[in-house]
Amino acid sequence: MTISRESESDTKPQLVRGIGLGSATALNMIDMIGVGPFITIPLIVTAMGGPQAMLGWVLGAVLAVCDGLVWAELGAAMPGSGGSYRYLKEIYGPQKLGRAVSFLFIWQLSFSAPLSIASGAVGLSQYASFFWPGLERVWATRTLSLNLPLLGQLQLTWVAMPATLLAIGVCLFTAFLLYRRITAISWLSKLLWVGVMGTIGWIIFAGLTHFNARQAFDFPPGAFSLSRDFFHGLGAVMLIAAYDYWGYYNVCFLGGEIKNPGKTIPRALLLSILAVACLYVVMNVSILGVVPWRELAQSGASNSKLYVVSTFMQRVYGHGAGGVVSALVMWTAFASVFSLMLGYSRVPYAAAVDGNYFRAFARVHPVHQFPYVSLLALAGVAALFCFLRLADLIAALVVIRIILQFLVQSIGVIVLRIRRPEMARPFRMWLYPVPALVAAGSFVFILVSRTGFLREIRYAAVILVVGIVVYCVRAWRRREWPFGDGSLVVSR
Image (tube, one colour):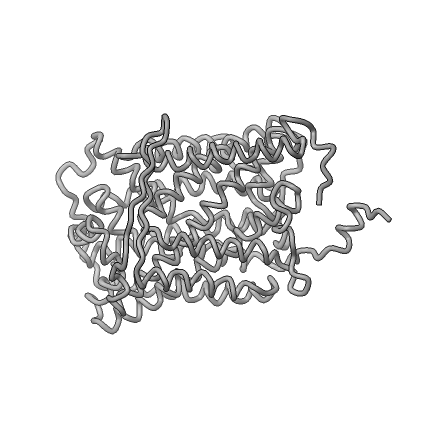
């Protein structure tokens, strides 16, 4: 007897819409904050050579709002699990180019999502070295080089040390916590949010009560001279700021589990962006008012002792306070890893259910009703990426995602308005199409304005080329676009 697809969907375990506005905003905020702002301050000060680097935080907030409006419109219009996978497929045609573009998104996500999770875990392990300096003892390090036709030299550096094992343990423990029903996770996200907000609140209070304005705004000569070095530095700072702000879209990947998504998704996006932007600017200016920027630049240049918040709190209240804030930052980093793994684990699931990814990822836990295969695979790859250096993780993540996701999506929201003007849109982008164009232009600026920008672009190019080859082979075997219409393929 043949069972129809409709009957299968009726008996198959379904995702539960159990996340309201409060939990959605909390998940976004802990995803955005993570360990990034606590460990990248020395890097951005080094990039621009002074406190004028704060300009990057402000412009990063503008970029986040503009791109957030893109996500808000798409997320409210297509509120299912999968986020960009669902959007790109619909924008560029479900059975034609959109199928290839959405497959390539999932393909790049196989690299960028674990990179993002691993960066949080590695950042946590670096703050743990404040307590146990031996964690930074290097056991082995290697640099692998490969010369590629047309692209040039591709390099990959990995390092093994005790901190690496701690980062791997964080990934695996997070997967263990997420191995349960979404409604149980909802209250856990709020508990993590309390820890994140408490940490930032204490840092801001300490900084403002010991603030030295002359030190915070000690700009070097020519700080705002519009030279080539200024724009190169600004591009490097905005790359780091993009990494620190990213996460505002996490709620879109959970669209199939959001209550009243047409209203909740846009509100959670914009509330989290505005709140985090204010916290970032105030927190970083507060730190600069206590720790001289030249001292931060030395740490950034050597890529060591990046636990600047621990140094800051130790200087204000003593060694004990430095230890307490280190533990709180580790809590914050773990909260980010938690939120990232939760959101991204739903994307391969959505693609697999759609027949555009490996079928195993479509499996839903029969009791707790979550995509357990996708979750476990994501945690395993993230654990492997913990062998990479933090700076390399951040740069590779941002460039890969800009090229293979954010640019095509920013332009895509305009394409969708033209192709599908009748489509129901519970939320419409303000000042359309200006935010989408500003976001796309800003992403291009980040890509090409940095010194040595070709290194990370090579990574993205290799992933893109290999992904196209994999898609073409798969499409040819399944007789999908551009080799057919897929009518002979049985979707499961």
